[in-house]
Amino acid sequence: MEKIIDGEKLNIPEHVAIIMDGNGRWAKKRLMPRNFGHKAGAKVVEQICEDAHSLGIKYLTVYAFSTENWKRSVEEVSGIMNLLRNYLVDSIERASKNNMRVRVIGDRTALDKDIVEKIEELEDKTAQYDGLTFTIALNYGGRDELRRGIKAITADVKAGKISEDAIDEKLISSYLDTSDLPDPDLMIRTSGEVRLSNYLIWQLAYAEFCFMDVLWPDFTIEDLKEAIRYYNGKERRFGGVK
Ligand code: FPP
Image 1 (cartoon, rainbow, N blue to C red):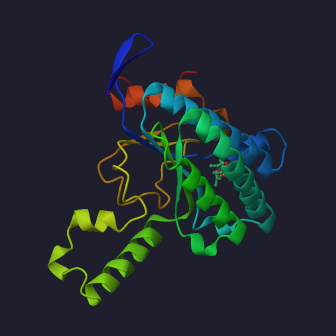
Image 2 (spheres, rainbow, N blue to C red; image 1 turned 120 degrees about the horizontal axis):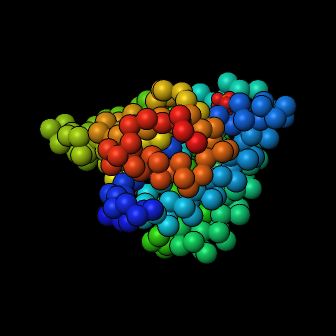
């Protein structure tokens, strides 16, 4: 979809995937605990969903907690989980206001039961909305997602539901958590790190990657527009001028 943004005609990516990095450093700069940064980061998530929708983005997918993040301190992990609890509950009302469908990808089996119930309720209550589709990657790892998908394919081959010859790229995609999403067109990672960190490794095969220096709690619609301009090939340097 094309849209005029700040006087410039731009092609809007349909699906944007974000690695929200830099919460810890943002908090440290303020001599505050890491969870202070995650809290600020969660607020930015709410705003960016509205901004993404207003810019014409149809799908937004964010990395909230990776399969590797369990290695962090108990205090930090429980802080993030509590933020998510609140977010999942508050989102029911917010999503209805913003016409937003919310869904969660990743391995739910390791999550607390009450979180799984809150996810199911939120997915159920927002399934009808057709504005932005907002996907939260939670206890998500790209390799783990492939592992689970391959197990499911193998089980279906064994059960005679599909033949081995039917295994093509489309079929593999249909066994992943993202089966109902188009592949991302643009991947944004904040905080200056240039890594994929096991995020959507299958789905990002053809995406444009935009690495930005801004720390996630400082991310605004202006940064999102900058990433979209980069996606359009209109800007080649990042983070330098602010
Ligand atoms: C990366 O920053 C951020 C995370 C691992 C957690 C992201 C979580 C949130 C933004 C809050 C909850 C999300 C939602 C959807 C409500 P970091 O801690 O690695 O920062 P650092 O690299 O500066 O230490």
